[in-house]
Length: 197
Image (cartoon, rainbow, N blue to C red):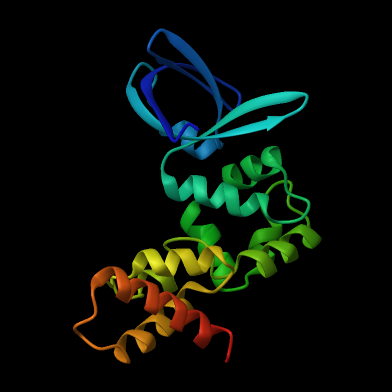
C-alpha cells in the first residue's frame, strides 16, 4: 500500500493536511504536533497509513516512521481507535510519551487530553518497552542484528531483553557461519532463551 507521500503542503484544516502531489490533493489526518512542523507551501514527505472500513476510508500521516509506528502500537491498545490515537499523539510529545511508558508514569499519561485512567493503564501494560527510541532503547548497543530485535519486539518481547537474548545467542555461535544462516540461528536461539526453555 502507501508507505509515504512527497509533495507540497497546500493547506491545513483542523487535524488535516492537504498535500499536493502529481496533480492530486490528498487530505491526510495528522497529529497536531506533526502538522505544526510542516510549513505552508513547503515540500514535505509524510509517512502514511490507510484506515479502510466498509463505510469509510481515511489516510493518516506522520512526520516520520517512528511516529507512524507509535500510532500503530496505540491502535493495538483496547479502546483506542485511529481518532483517539491521533488525539493522544497530539497531546504528548514522542519522547515524553516514551519516557512516561518506560517510567510507568500513570499520572503523566492521565494528563493527556482525552486519555482516562483505565486507558492509560492499558497503554502501560501494552506498550512498555515497545516504542522506538525510549531512553532504555537509546542505550541499547548498535548491533548487526537490530532488525532481529525489532522482529522480536513485534512478537511482543521487550527490546532490551530481546537484545540481551541475541547477544547471548551470538556469543555461543561459531564465527565461520554464513551471515544468512547466522541470522536464522540467532533468531531461533533468542526465542528459546526468551521463552525460558
